[in-house]
Image (tube, rainbow, N blue to C red; front, side, top):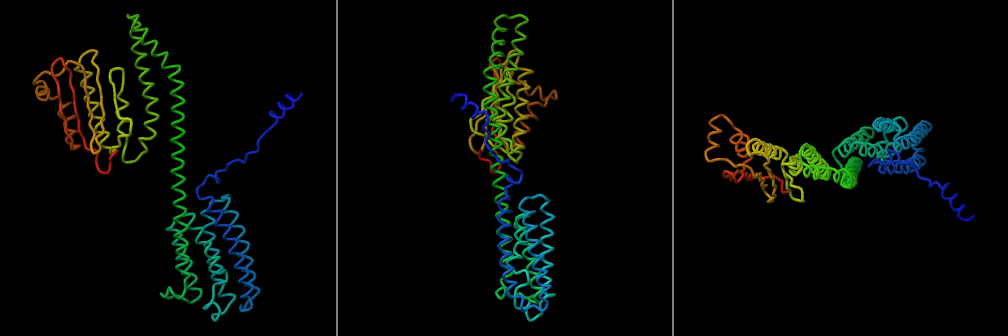
Length: 402
């Protein structure tokens, strides 16, 4: 009886989880909410200032109308900006216009003897909300621009247009607020972008490891078995063994590229050279690279990959049937060494000169020419029947120290 009751309890238990909205994941969402809380606090100050100052206004009823408008707009804008139900740029623009209008209304409710020596009707503290909205929305430059605009309007309305900043701190305060909140917003967005990229990398790594386990436990073992048994049987089965071997290598490269590619190629000016060279591996080409990334300028990496392609093409065409090629990448800090070696027939003495005379430019142009462009060096070591080895040394380029 007790077991049945516990089972029913577990089956009917549903934890309550709040849905995560898009606004919750925005990096500036906390800043928007904090800004609206500040807006409501400044509204309390502005209303209390109205109670103290209304006796000095020449049009007291009109001043209360503008204060009521300020209160209504504070509530509406706070809701819209904190929840993001409407495009925020529209609310930010409206915020600037409403604040300017309320500042200008000071001249409608008070005389020169008052507004020239006191704050505008909405108070400087409440005006700061427009600057904060602009800064959170557009960053430091837009925040400072809004601060300059509000300070200028305040000076014009109060007939205080002068260069004496020490006399009135309105301009420095507003511009400083725009700068500080804008920088905070920019920092928050950059931190969020870095966090999202780290999450994507972690997810990709986890998926790669899961795929590697599944492939290794199933497909790769089957392909390896087919390749081994096909070679043992011989005849037509040998062709099937070769195909299985090629697919095995392709799958292994796919798994490794998921790990290397995610961290190496982020679309910038540099790339992990292992990513490019690793894709050259096959049943006849073995590629060995360091465990750590070998970061190099993208253009230089592309040229190096083209050099390797030319060397491997020469192996396929001239090294002989069954020849194997080996690509080795070494990172020496300021430069990289790429070695391409094969166990084929080698190159006879004088054959390179004959090939160049015949118009075949594979080595002289595709290899040596590219190496010269990269300010590197190339050494060829070959003997008939002993295979061929190219050793390419190339500087990484500026600010690339892997």
